[in-house]
Amino acid sequence: MQHGYLLGTLSNMWNVNPGVMAIVSATAAILSMTLNAMNWSNTPVAVANTPNNAIANTITLSATGITVPVDMIARVTGANILSANRTMNVIVNSAVANSMSVGNNVTFTIHNGDSIAFEFINSNNTAYNTWSGSTQVLNITDANTVIDTFTFESNVEGNDRSVTPAPAWANITDTQESPTNATATTNTDTIDGITGSVSLLITLTQAMSSTRTLAIIVDGATVTTENTGTTVEFIVAPGATVSFKFTNTDNSDQIWSGTATVTNLSDGGATLDTFTYSLHVNVTVGVGVVTL
Image 1: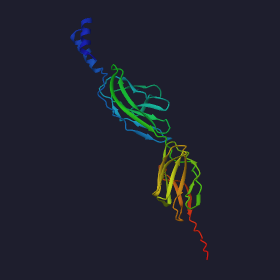
Image 2: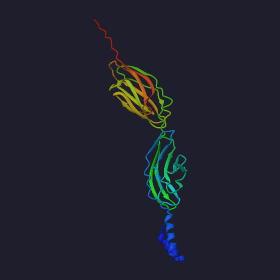
Image 3: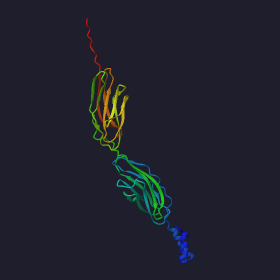
Image 4: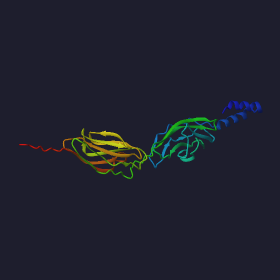
């Protein structure tokens, strides 16, 4: 408040004596509506998985410097405004003073000594949904003075990682006569029940090699073909279709056979299915006829 201007104006208008002016000045000083500096800092990034909400919280600060109640506004700036699934709560003295899920402003009133915090609730339970933005806090009573600006981020991954129902790939086998390669592809099954991408792992009991290859087919396209080791890791999205193609090009009468186990690394290594594979390239030895 401009105390000098106030006193001068009063003196000119009513010619108030100095004693009265001193009282007015003291009263004006007492009626302070200017908050001391406050800095809530940027919120830590909040992450949750469906069906939980992601809640980003600021630190709690105490209001000081005011001697009268003041009206405040917390304003989310930018395009990421409040909505049915995006709520800002103003917490005053550990209780929700106001909550909004529309527009971009939340108003509230505080007194000296009140504790103030903000929380940003993202309940938009879709895969990897991010709500982030900037919040400006203003003192409306004190000519819309900006008190602080901070950022927030509240993410719902919406990622139920359990594949249900479990897929079932049938046992496969193929036998060919050399020099034809033995090859077999499992049936195609769908990865359901998840709301975000997951990492799957197929483990073989008989290793791959330069003549024994495994192709991972996702949504009808080969995403990788491996020829070494006993494991292949790959990523699938919700609703993806998966099949496995085994090929044996070893033309020395060798059988490539074993058991394949598919696990969900994103769900603690849960086993999805186990099936067998057997691929044989048979070498036929011709019988010669000797004429005497």
